Length: 445
Image (cartoon, rainbow, N blue to C red; front, top):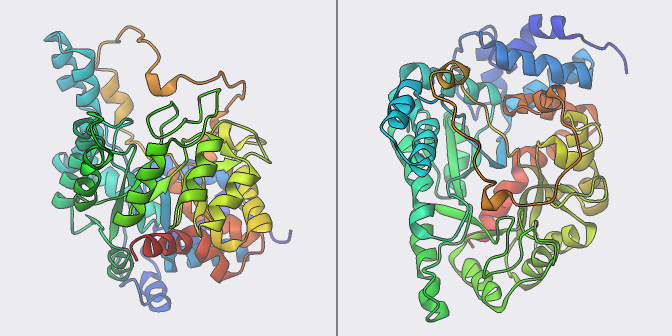
């Protein structure tokens, strides 16, 4: 590779700084090259966490100056759609949490309060709002398929995150809004805004088990509230099928097949990211619309319960769906870093085609203020392992470098890495957003 650029010169390069939002210089020129996004002067990023993550990834990739410049420009011009992820998370209010604990709040209350703070303080606290906006802008992400549901089937349990992200997008709509159609996502890019397209971590069920029609009635309600994708299962077995952590690996139930049919009718995308291999396979086989594994990996490169074998990926591809490659080192295997992420993308492209892969990070940026706030909170006793986390022990050892290299704000360097590996501009744009947009469009037709 010729003309490698080191991390110091990377941070000092004006084009790199412009494309990553690090400086206002030449922002108008970049906007002219990308008429979809209006010119906007951006303040230099002073966030040392974001800059450090970029240095770590750059040291691994070692792109040439030409590759770096082109990748950053392409990223800025493109509609970028995270096939499963999280908006930047806010710091908790440590004093408020400490007060709740001193007032003998239950474990459930404390957990609920923590979650609410992380999802909504970007609205109510000016410092957290600055962190939120800075991280979102730094990522260059147009839209996130946002996790807006807690793991399970209880409608009231699933409602909480949906309410929180609805609140955030209602209150910050000038910056980030709730998209309900693929056209909204295109519009967000054209207007230089961001948006969330919502997914639930479960299918809302009445759990009365009287009739299948009555059991599924909340699916339409959640669709009307903006949910556009639902997990079939989440790690464990439910009435639809087996999750990825079940050793039995049973397939889709009769009721699960009925649910897939209702998803197809409503326009909800079936997501098998956390489903067992047989459940994933059979979901794809019975669906008449695209199925996705929104944040997964390829078992051929690293076998893990959260990966998918070729047979399952092929079945998903046959629905015109996709597999989103996640940014979790222990699922990626190998070096567990940004290069491993790109290896999994390469594998899908080479074996199944350019139209069937995306990046579904499954990671988030967390406010720098969180560490300080957490120090104000009394240490809680160690709790039992959560139901959703009951899965086999994983011997893979993650390093800080691995995790840092695939930080959510490193999205621009994912694009640089794809350019570095020889993908055409059109193919890069499919991987970083176009394929997810297509699946969303086909699901609603």
